[in-house]
Length: 421
Image (cartoon, rainbow, N blue to C red; front, side, top):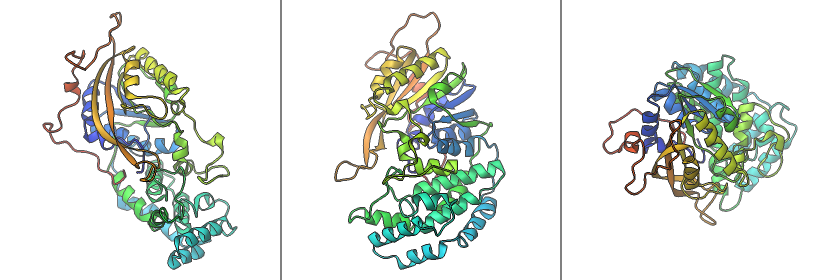
């Protein structure tokens, strides 16, 4: 799915090997910032470990839970027959479908299409409980797309494992269909430069994307039953214990992630208050705030988290861009903090991350960056504190070579394939 800082590529570029090595003696693997859930899915399906995934937002816990809670595959054709087929049939009978479909067929110039779509979705033509139509139709989604997502939500199965899969597929499809630049901070405008992207997004079929998500989620399942919860990372860390391997991929943005993924959060929750502004944001009290996205609090939050994990005697794998990010943190700064509590080994890899809506006019949409991968192990009790390093000729107290193998010589392994990015 569209997600800034996704670890999907890094899992094939050393992170998967590091998690495999560091989890070999762990009882559980805990993902405290699970986000798009790629790491949680990888560990649950590949490493024969119990996974506990946490995130501040419901959509992330929903994505993780669709795989980590389930220990058997599901038949995708059965899910499609029980959910997508009746949702598609119901969509065509919904109030507003005839008018919405007529707009798609006429497909006037983009500015006119957008204006008439907003007028249609703002009218009283549709029932009050149509969540996506009422809040996002004519903005992130065309009217027909909005009705499709409303139909999917109304047709969700009651059986929990099926509901988890279908709701996760709805979130993924909405992410890929949203007319927005990599997230849902603001929809594309019908301008000369952005209009073509809006038009392209509005022509995508939500049911087709949901079906693809179902087909790829259904075969994925945990080897051991896990959990996925909504919680603050620092509070969740206080519940952990020796034997847990903790994966940390904290926010790097100085803007709260709830601003970028509020549409997905609305879908996951199934409700939201009155939306406002160009971005169609829900009320402030409904948008989770993280200390990691506040420049005045991020450093203290990170230090507190590392200290808590060291006190709980957890081993840690941490990833973060090496450069200073907009929230004031950098991989190098986090490494220095970690040395106060852990023995540290590091590896740097090249990756690309979202610049949150940048374009060729002001900045690139994606930027190449050095990303640090840190393996942290608590010091032995009573040992004099030292600050190990992997630079120069100094050797870490545990070899990174044992944690991160050279991919050119590593044995071929099965990897998770997902159409989302």
